[in-house]
Image (tube, rainbow, N blue to C red; front, side):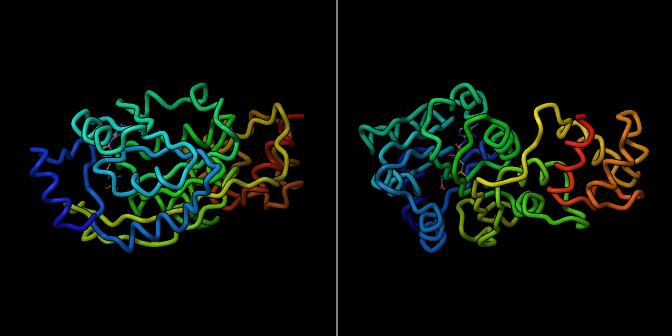
Length: 269
Ligand code: SAM
């Protein structure tokens, strides 16, 4: 959809784009094509689209996927989409409430998520998919650039955080493009980025009782402090750091994902 088409449609539907719902509609065809190319949806695949809006991505996803589940909170947009795409599996409501590990567990393990996410829900949506037992095989998301930098960060970088570690435990994260505010109407205040999250199928195994999430949270909550001190209660932390190949004075931001896994496994014994 071009800028002119989006403006006309908004006027025709009598909409006033809502800031609270992050309604910044995509108007740049090159960006749309880039997202769809990375999503590479096959005819046998199931896709979830969160916030289809005026349908910039929905039209092609609906044609390409075997099953498209679109979740839209704004009832005016949900009505419009349902009329434009009869047969579309459209759920009207808040994706944060609708999506939970128990509602996505029955989807095929190859399902994909494609979304220009409203900024305010990007973290809970990511957490839901990353923490769930049935994780999407791939996610192509347009999110705030700042959040994208955190998700893709590497050790010793200021953006490397607990969210980075939790996400990269299961996904390869690639920033494929930074998107200017001019590509949306109305224009958001900040830059966005398209990220691709590809599920990792081979990864060092976390042992069942490994306190992975606890130690990562504790470590990054006080990131300037040494892990040896922060995790002293666990016992065996010095040995765990040694096995992980990290210095005894290491802080959270210095550990790679593999080192976090080794440390958590060592502390589970
Ligand atoms: N996909 C469209 C596009 O690319 O032009 C719209 C993207 S716009 C950034 C975000 C969309 O998410 C809006 O349509 C908005 O109404 C919808 N939305 C906002 N909060 C939502 C929520 N909690 N659950 C589902 N949809 C939501």
